[in-house]
Image 1 (cartoon, one colour):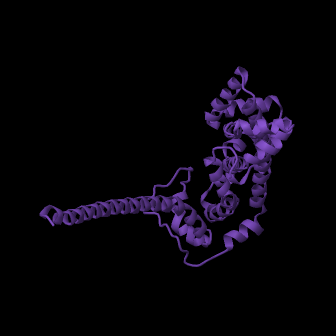
Image 2 (cartoon, helix red, strand yellow; image 1 turned 30 degrees about the horizontal axis):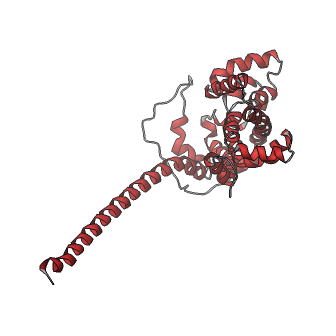
Image 3 (tube, helix red, strand yellow; image 1 turned 180 degrees about the vertical axis):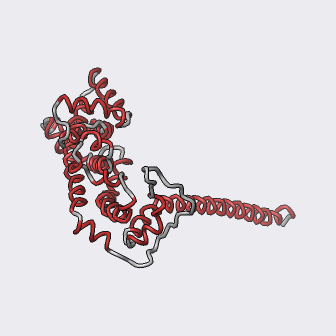
Length: 319
């Protein structure tokens, strides 16, 4: 055997060792990036969850303990001005003694809070149901039939969707006054039912459904109503659930609309009370906020799979 032939295994071993070291460095870099991304995600998760955990834990504190910890934050002067906070606020996640007095007051001693909670349900429930109904019909029309006029109308929907509600609040107030529905729930319901957000979302989703699926249904003799009810709506289940969750959370937290359009405090939702916390209701605010976030959390946890599916699904038939 020649010297060149004897050197071939050694070269191969060196190349294998270099390749192994290169792969090891790549794995180390990948592990470091993964650890860094995990640490960043955990930090953001902690920052986002900290207010929720703080609210829930403080709702089980006694009024005296809450006042001792946060009373200086909400204290006011005799003229109604804010008091300068000279000391650090004591954020406590674990109460010294667990107390259910705040929940007893909210649920049994003060029915006003439950009344405002049901006001929120009465205001938001019809908006979610009928906005999805109107949006499904309108989006089917926008997706199935193209034309210059329809595209202009859809473009107008997009412009309205991009505008913040504060911009359209004055026109809504004027229209409600002209329709003589101010200080009634219709002043909240009508703008919410005909909101453009769900129309935009469902239209973009229906347009991703393959045309061949609809053509096959037409060949089988299906009419427009059957295509809408048996083809488009089942395929849009994820998008509809996504829109329902987003619309519910948006209107569940509304404050400006009832403040401007409803002058009767008895008709205000619970979100308005949470925006008007005063020094004597800090403990109640924690308990009310905890109760108020329960429907949103339950709906999100129940519909999380549909929410992700509705955002990521590109249309068509799943295998």
